[in-house]
Image 1: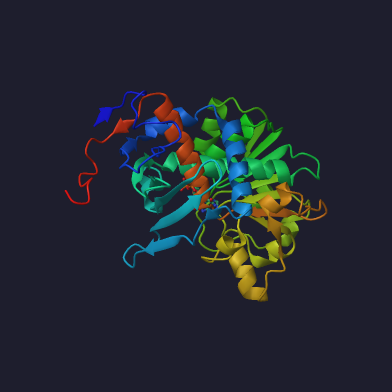
Image 2: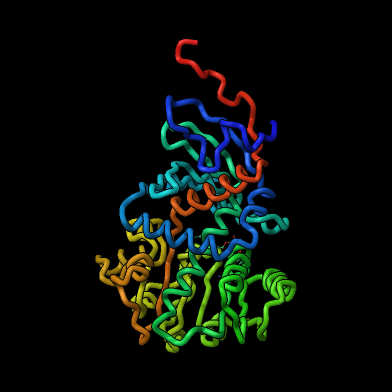
Length: 361
Ligand SMILES: NC(=O)c1ccc[n+]([C@@H]2O[C@H](COP(=O)([O-])OP(=O)(O)OC[C@H]3O[C@@H](n4cnc5c(N)ncnc54)[C@H](O)[C@@H]3O)[C@@H](O)[C@H]2O)c1
């Protein structure tokens, strides 16, 4: 593996494709350390990029087929998901995120999720980069949550009491993105089945200098009733919150973990998703509502509909945002990282990765 000269012709900041005859692009590997360095301190820019990506997707300039879930009879709680996608606009890249979820990992202190992202060249189809992608995935998820918090709260008093329901890595990233995009809270509530996770999250809040009073709630009801912005980031596989009355104060709910809320709660709320077809799959809570009611009338629209003004969000009901998580977001953030690393001259190219470079030898 070598580090390229940033002025080398094969390496450009816009990707490997150049004008003229098609050539086999160089193949680069981008580590988690490089990904983190490229993204750190760029939260506002990433939220903007995620917004643009939702707009491109909403306008139909993308291909985002259903995610493919690989499950194992001998390890029923684990899975690996493939998210193939193609994004147009200025990003113009194809690719695949391949992300594992092994919840048993956390007992040994290592993260649940691990991932790689492959970027494919728009013109030749050649893969040109493999990026560590757990950070990209957490980043795009948190950026989407921060974007949703901003747009979905515009018609109501801005929340000052946030509650984190589930306090793992995704909750940490969401707090970081909220704080970095202008949110400050008088009260931060925390609830987790694991006292260790809750304590670790509180320690992290202190380290990050988060202002406001931090309270660990033993009861789920207490957490919800005392928060105007509720973030679900658990690993629950089936609904465990089913009492609509807990949401009588009409909070904004970022339902990032997708399977926590029972149909009764969604039916009493305004429901916004990232993509209708994606979200109504894989036994998410919105999917359960569709199965129960036999229709999609409970959906108010997508986040893009709200941003574009096609859907307005009433303040007189709870609002629930359920983002399935789109491969196009991973591509957009992954390409941003690729361009940053390439620009800095630190792209690690694997020499001769593609060896058969001529059709006739
Ligand atoms: N929608 C998206 O785009 C998207 C993207 C990435 C991750 N996610 C989801 O976010 C969730 C969190 O991911 P993570 O990496 O932070 O996981 P994690 O394992 O690091 O943390 C999950 C936390 O939730 C807690 N928990 C589990 N069940 C709970 C319950 N019923 N009540 C309270 N706490 C509970 C666990 O103790 C743990 O601390 C996962 O479900 C993941 O699939 C969604």
